[in-house]
Image (cartoon, rainbow, N blue to C red):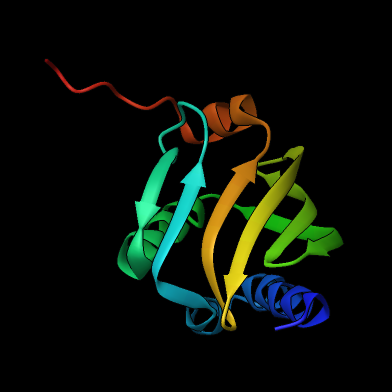
Length: 129
């Protein structure tokens, strides 16, 4: 796919997410997608495959979350989405880096305010060792 087609795919994903159309969002992901949410929040981690990503998105949706897409930048298979997120009355900015291959998103790396995520979703609990 061209850079423009990759950008359009990611834009459609954000539009579907904003509309609550998770079925369309999930259809845009490769079966073996990898999603990385950095930080130490309860939702931080590396998620593999559509099932884990769906569970992650479900946990995000437990709070009042909205994402506004400000800009898309593409080079080759990489699309960077600059966004503003609002969750539980707090606002932050993210740069989400997508890798697109053969019309499907194969990986997502979120670069955002990890402290905001910890404040809203809580800190990850450490397992007893």
